[in-house]
Length: 376
Image 1 (cartoon, one colour):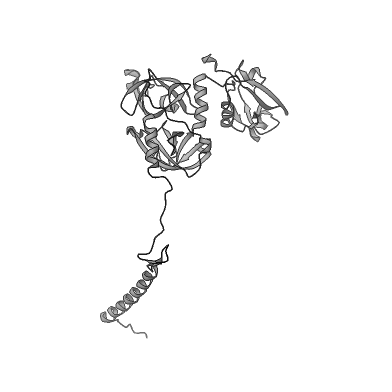
Image 2: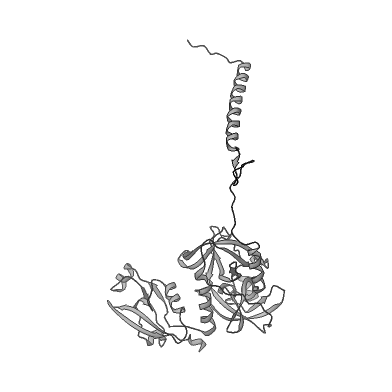
């Protein structure tokens, strides 16, 4: 039969003291090892030991200088739009004015002061007001907006000669990891600046069913930042802030923000101001094995033309419904974004070479870029 031996409180206390002393000696030895003086650059021992440091390789006040060069060109954009009735009361009271807020920046194009912003900031607005950093308010006239690119051009009415234009940089030369500054009016906080780096560039998912060429940054962008510039340390606009990725409905920024490359914005400015280049290619869809089988195409690459504007440049050049566009001037075409970019590289009056497949036969068509008919 086993007997239960009761340990006295005195014995327990002695055991705890022994364990505590042993732990203390071991911890002290470990701490001394960590804090052993380390030789410095000159060979002398230094104490306390040196810790690794992170060096930010920018010139002193580089970000401050970039902001000072750009801030006078950044504007606040206020809009008034009329929404469609959404309930019984709005039907009874009639259309109600809806205020909107966004950002933009002044630049010069063909000796004109213009404001670049997002299409979703100004599209459909009955009134546009451009507010300068010094508080002056100017009426804005919408020159043009395109939903696909989400870019718009506004012209300040009776613009004074002392406006400051932001220099447009070269987004093709942007490098991943370089410092950038996002400027605008998030939630109405005028003149807000946030800083980050270029996280990535190129084609990225920007929606559930769309990829586009963007500059991705971790500089914080929030509601109201839309249309403001993404600026490099030279104080040049390299992008137009327009969207964020957020896992929640509140669209809270989590460090994944997107800007439209400024080189695309330059091409779109020409398009919006002059109404072209335009080929008259309507709906298209990326080709696939399933689509090719369904409509009886010989290949499953390129983009399938679903509609061509009759009498437009492409139609006059011979393009027809269900033709498969493979390339334009040597640029391979695989989706609508690539098709749009290939056309925007040109000017009105340029001749474009389209390589297509029709009935299994590859053909080359030529079309002269023109203007959108409504602006002729």
